[in-house]
Image 1 (cartoon, helix red, strand yellow):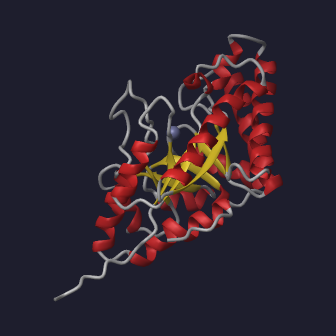
Image 2 (cartoon, protein in one colour):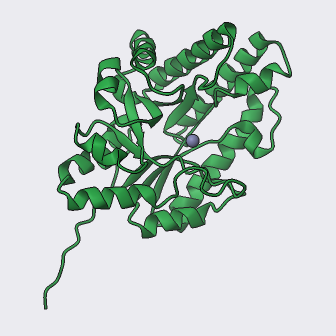
Amino acid sequence: MILTVVKKIPITDNHLHLSERGRGIEAIRDFERAGGTHAIVVSLPSWMYGVIAKCPEDYDVGYEATIRMVERVNKETGVKAWAVVGVHPAELIKLKGRMKISEAVEVMKGALERAQKLVVEGKCVGIKSGRPHWKVSEEEWELSCEVMEYAMRLAKEVNCPVQLHTEGATEEGISHIGSIAKKVGLPTHKVIKHYSPPQLQMFRKGGVFPSVLAVDGAVEKALEQGDDFFIETDYIDDPKRPGAVLGPKIVPKRTLSALKKGYEDALWKIHCENVERAYNVEVVV
Ligand SMILES: [Zn+2]
């Protein structure tokens, strides 16, 4: 009898969402069945939790829901999950309808401080921030950059990463984000741009670490260039928008297909070492 030894490899989805109103644990079971082992679960914008935010404390609802989902994943499945919570850049637009824009900025900064506190308490491993990917006024752009820089400062203080939701990647934009991180002193491997294209050279040059969206062909294209990136689905877990982004099985699927092509060392780096170095966690398989 011939026994085929299947080597266990860590498979980490670096950015997905799990909602108590969505498929939640069931989505993670799909991820696990496909070969997934680790997941970074990111908080959704406050209004997705039915919150009309007016003060920093209002963000706790979404933060706590994210942490609850992570606890359930760790208890009820074989996947190891960690939470990243923070403030979506679109919060500025929502908040400024309820208060002066200067006050909106303070609310966002206060909410980021609450995220930092959760990192210190060991309930989260990173802070989410960013700047708009849609057209905004000059003032809104400047203030969004100020909030993002503040998030980087908070991350630097406690040696955790930021996961950034920003405008589409261009050389100029990535270099600008990297220059802010450099000014703050946050190292490149902790400045993670979620929803990234597989253009590693641009990220290296700019000093930002890409989390490559696992659309068809993107992972292989990135692997051809190196192993300094993460892989993500941005699975949104919204029952009203099925198939809006990638499903939870995609990262395992792309990884196992790349494994067959001989990228084993690079895949270990991406799914284990890069994760450990960015989030100060241990990836065990
Ligand atoms: Zn997302």
